[in-house]
Length: 281
Ligand code: PAF
Image 1 (cartoon, rainbow, N blue to C red):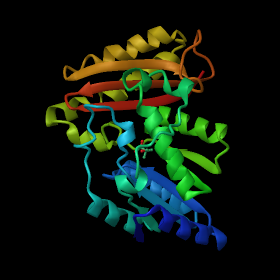
Image 2 (image 1 turned 60 degrees about the vertical axis):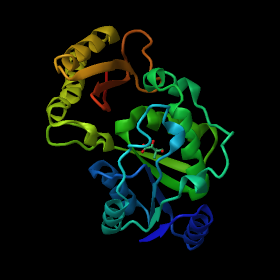
Image 3 (image 1 turned 180 degrees about the vertical axis):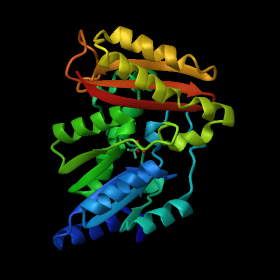
């Protein structure tokens, strides 16, 4: 595995790979890799002759007061794990390399980015879409692997790729969970041991919502109240939202129908955790 820090170097290598007929798989990350990220890298290694993983903690997607400075980082371990999986290139640009001058071009995907996460993090997805657009422009034609744990992020990126005709095939991979159901996240490291015990309540809330739908419930407000009640049984959880929406629009438009997505977000002390699952009615 080669570690590359400049945009020009990575472009050169990947152009040469594609020129030699080797297709590229790309896994964008912010590092501090866990089993969820590694499942994306493994899928890419299995599907593509060449895999590039990027590690870049993108300042644009953090608001003032969020955890940009304390975001966990461990490049030595990340690098060893990627090499062991057969990743070909690790792209680790500096902030100066990615943003040599203050960026004024911003990619917005308003209708998809506005609900749910967008309500409490109004600028987050513009930061995500902008850096992902930039990374796609650097990597070029590829298959890009994203985790379904960040469902709204997947929707934003898919819509951006489609609207802007980017030469990228987005592959959404299933959420990887701890044995007790907690979705893997770099931010789980912020949980105290007491909060860690209660955090799987998010998975339990999704299960309760899925059960309600399986029992015939199509009123999103009822499904949402069912999920919220489960989250609220955890004394250390502060619920941000429990939503039952149409999977494509991320809003509900009357009785739930077709592809439905359930999404929850809650704070446990310093950790803000999200999770989701889907079903079809
Ligand atoms: O999901 C993440 O880790 C980030 O939002 C991403 C896609 C790497 C963009 O910074």
